[in-house]
Length: 374
Image 1 (cartoon, rainbow, N blue to C red):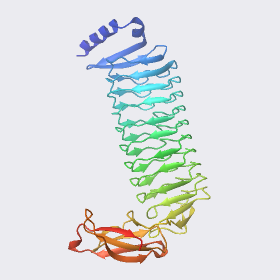
Image 2: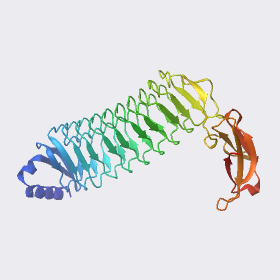
Image 3: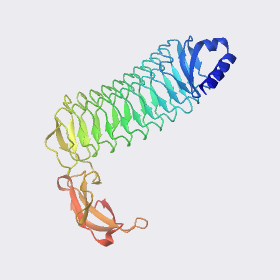
Image 4: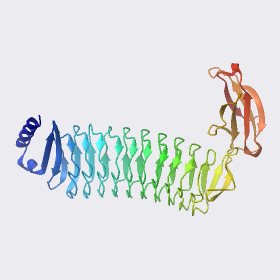
């Protein structure tokens, strides 16, 4: 079979113009045709449709290459394939690519536009390292992980869209992306890796979803434009220096009990205050190196992020918080389609919260609660 495909490849190349034959080298294996190397002068290159994979370093150090279109038949692009192509500005990956290797576009310093095929499952380690002119990236829904240093040193990156399919943001993923101003971490991610957003000095807004349970070592170190951050109740561990050196950080809002953290988390953040919900546990006057204060808002609400919410021993209960010395009426109904709300209890949020509970009964199945002002 290998011999047959070799003959076919020879015929295809024989039919191509002589100049094109000289630019590319190929290998074959069990019907797969791999583009192994490129020796042309560069410019805009369109890869032939019969190619099924691109070998590692196939275009590496091709300084004359300005754009490349990868056809739908390619399923695999090897590591370093376009490494250090310093004049490459645009890449279009079409069709059925599922695997792209690490260091793929590292130090393509003029790369401004890249379209990643929907089918790629991971952004590999150092994929876009040092792509200083890359301003925005849309990661397709097929991607589940962003590798180590994937966008390290992309100083021109201002926008990145991370889909809900991503479950892992690895170490150093966006380190040194000084132009990145906002990042929304999808609610599929369970941990933010160490140094993930290290020295993202332009970052002003970050959304951490309730799926995240840990924030890594120096994850947001020296994010000097970050002024506030909300930590969901799901976070149980914050590693050393996670927000250290974020010198303009004034407020860290915690939605649950105090996570495990040492005194370096907010190191050098001299104006930072950690705000916690009344009724949450584990808090004292100082947390992780900064002062603490109760987190009060004008209107109370049911806190569903603490362990005491829901069915307990012979009862059902929840904490009402976020306002101080306000009176709250708890009402119940058994039919949301045609609700009739019955007042059960009126209480004041002395010191900011109170815990409501009532004994469970068999006729409470399908019971719903709400709160309102008296």
